[in-house]
Length: 114
Image 1 (tube, helix red, strand yellow):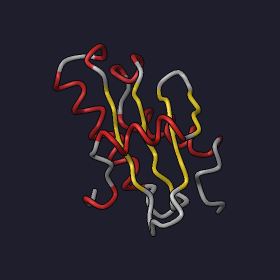
Image 2: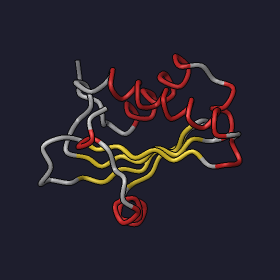
Image 3: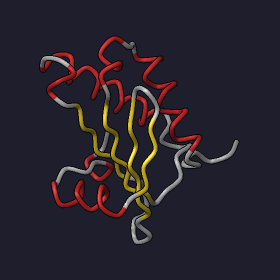
């Protein structure tokens, strides 16, 4: 994923948490806020230490980044999106995580209609 598609700074995360809307399912929590001056969406990922060791957390983040990369053309912009992984994601494979992410994005109307 390109650098301009990532949220890295703590201030940006806090802005999304404070001003954004939220929605969740059992596996993931999504926070998002509209950023009209951007020409694309940006994502930030958060996987807490309670979920597992570094290998597990990095695998989950890798799966989420890959899911966003595959959905890049379908996601509405300009949004800043923060995804927080919950405990059940540690036992999920790539396709299950992607399906859960699509469910969240669809419910919050962040996916373009086909």
